[in-house]
Image 1 (tube, rainbow, N blue to C red):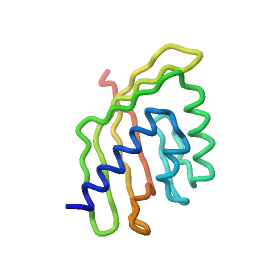
Image 2: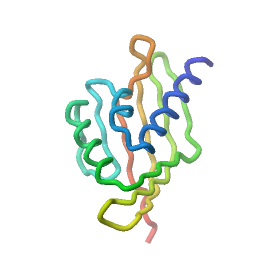
Image 3: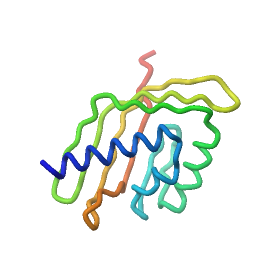
Image 4: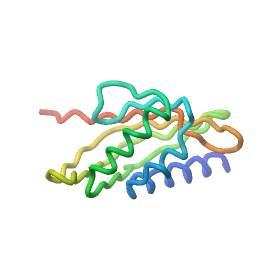
Length: 130
């Protein structure tokens, strides 16, 4: 049970870093070979060195940001950790109105040197149903 609690704690720290718009703290959880499908990008972003400047720019352009996981679930299989669920994302850009979206997410982690590192993230907006 310790591994799953540790994974859940790591995910909570990641959410806190995102909500502080702290790219340095958030990226400290990333594996060098992370692959990300951000919620507003049609393309994958590969590698920590590519993703860091994008995160820095996104956070710098936001006046406020609130990521709220909805019923996140955690699973550990060997040295692989999975966190998935739904989320509410409210972003107020410095030059625009507040927008809120709902999305589903999957974070994949690998336990490396006793630490959970994010190796993949996929977040996609939920269809509007209209």
